[in-house]
Image 1 (cartoon, rainbow, N blue to C red):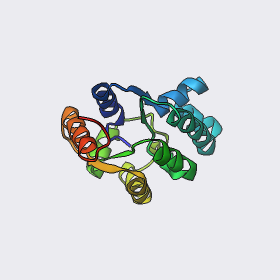
Image 2 (tube, rainbow, N blue to C red):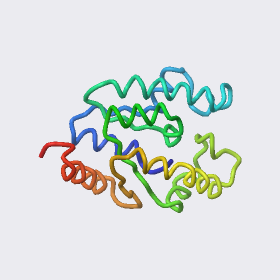
Image 3 (cartoon, rainbow, N blue to C red):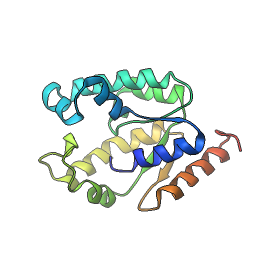
Image 4 (tube, helix red, strand yellow):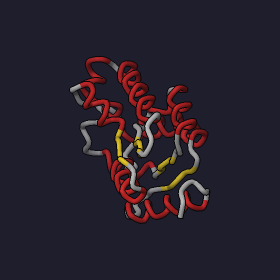
Length: 165
């Protein structure tokens, strides 16, 4: 959460000549409602069902870069889809950066009426080992320029033989 997946994803997709797709935006488009509404009315479990459906559908396509929500890796089938059908990049950042980027955000259901530091730390504790298991490689975003982060990702993709020069 709040690592810059959309900003970095769009830039990276452009550099790699891929179509950028954000799973959260696709969920909202398909539902005709925003994610906070889906959480409020349908609950997190139904949101995760929608998320799994979107991830399954888009990971079967070629020529895309799919940015997924932070909790998508909690479901085993999503981890399987992502690992088997693509290259997974784990964008990481510091807890302080996440807190700073979300402090005024009213659209993140898991942070509503909650202590951001506590919730983000708990999510990190649960999700970090899963992200590390699923990812082909990890990139620390921090406060660096998005273009620098994209250059770093492209270098790692090339170094690992995952994209051509």
